[in-house]
Length: 458
Ligand SMILES: [Cu+2]
Image (cartoon, rainbow, N blue to C red; front, side):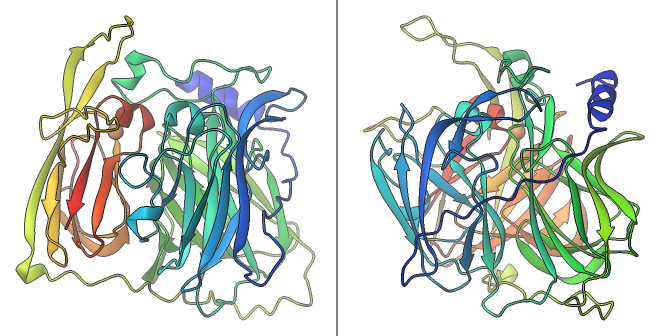
């Protein structure tokens, strides 16, 4: 997207809309964390005044927020009402492989009309998300993206707890679909959508009482976009990165989240009438994602001027002294376009350690990119030898990031490490979860054209 198109986006954003309230898909009964979820075709009004045919969880855009609690079992009865197979992956949750939602590697594809019950106990609290792990360009691109929020075992006392899922849709100004993927973009930064939304609305206006302590859970569920987040008009603190609370909050200057990544911000609503904006930066320009306005003071809000401290997640501590380093180089493979028997082009553009992902079929599961020993600490040394961003996601485990671009950082936990242009990172983790775990770039077109693999922990 060029600068002019971005400017057009921002002028289109003048009419801020009130945020629709989303419903929970909860089932009445003894277990408070029991849900029914479907994936199905639906119609949504994304561009005001126009109808768009989408794929939606429970027919809703934005998808229902699934709320779970740390250490409590959650049960999600998922029914596939699409006309093609699917599975659901719970991004960032350290749960058993059988529940990880990757076709062939962790479960059979869920066929149209079938129901699969996902049941797990999330060990970590935080902001996570869910999405299919099949035909991802289409299934995620057309709307199958939602938030799963795991509340802390002991409730944390914010006045407002808001979820904001960010997605650019491949829509024209009449809400009609444009191409979701183009090879020339797939080989570069990925194809960007053009209609920016937060919770399905272009630049929504959110209003909370003056003095409220707000926890804003931002999730980038886009196929392609990396958002360089900035808050204009209020001081916001970074309180959690990719779902995991951090020890010492710090003021948000700007923070990049690639596809699949999250950021929790904490801030206190200023005096009544004050307005401010969450925006993403491109060079010197800021583009609004959501707008905020302070409402009248609510006597129920007990503002002591302090943000509550979030407890840290019980992520196993890597034994760095005994760690084994495994190197991964991500690079570009020239324009090779193998053609199948039907004459379709299946380009591979991206490589992990000189190998493009072959794809899987029943009876043909390729070898992992690494074989890891259960219980051992590994340091993944990631090198991006390309000009484009790659958010590298590992299933079933959480990295402790030690270094970015050759420099030590204040260690933080994440399931997705964002490698910038020619970037490098070192992330350590304990391989404590047995199974075959996907390991891939979360720019969907990159993952679909080679930048994917899995690690085996046994
Ligand atoms: Cu990538």
